[in-house]
Length: 384
Image (cartoon, rainbow, N blue to C red; front, side, top):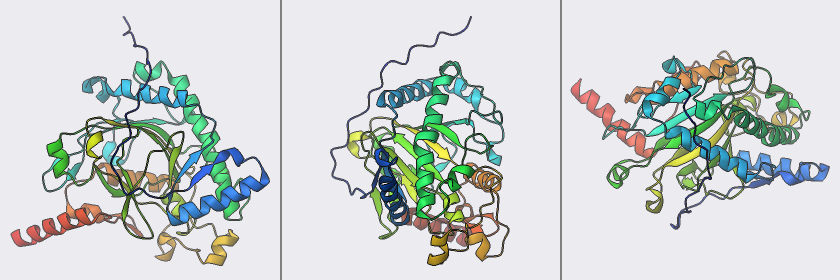
């Protein structure tokens, strides 16, 4: 007899923090003006300024009702309430080799090298709804898969496509330049994600420097809806300081990522960000997020777009692979190389600065982590 799936019910967001945090000043792109030539031109200017100076921005006016957003929060919450042994049935084989669709359990990473405390981060990735991918989910999700598909596709069509057109306009490229290499049907590793950071005790939070250390995302744009739990921080490119990213009502938080950095020869930033310990008045709740990771088609070679007049004028004509004379990877090669590095992360100082592909070495972005690793290296030398 099939299990009865309970109704989702309503989803209640937590109260915003009352702490006075050092918030980042980010641009908001209002897509309600996208359909006029003047509005589109102004939005393109706003977008390129935002992703060159900060790399993070907000989007609003994307015509997705809040009720549908809250339905997805409720669905993610219900999935994570399942017993661990049930969720683990949906863990993909080959996590260490970079596979990522399905359930990724918590506890795979050491997030505090000094104490050995591990992450409490659970991930559930849902690939694109195309013939390239199978969809085998727990009934909590499978029974509502049409709703999930509609929501994921609406993010692609109503948010990402306009952003890619604006980016092309800003770089003086044909309007469909980026939408062509990010179109939905061809194979790419786009995915929709439910992500949960589990709450911790005050004692654990006092020891931990961050729930996830500074990193960049490997695709083009990442879209994020989240509970109003303050924890996301960006490293301000102009001041090198960590700033809190404030949750905004009826918006999506967006960041630019590695693939756009490669395609523009570094003109577009791949933004450094992390998830840190929330303020004390929000540490009693889990932090749940809905994300969409947008990536170019798997066969796209990540070489600099030299046909852009803007990039030519500004002198951004080679990315890191091209500058070093190494082969430029396809998006598929880059995706699984970086995912394999992320999934196999060990408490080893050498791992944090590993060469992912010839021409690209990872970096440490947190002074706190850098200090800990230097101490570890000194201890290893002393023992040797």
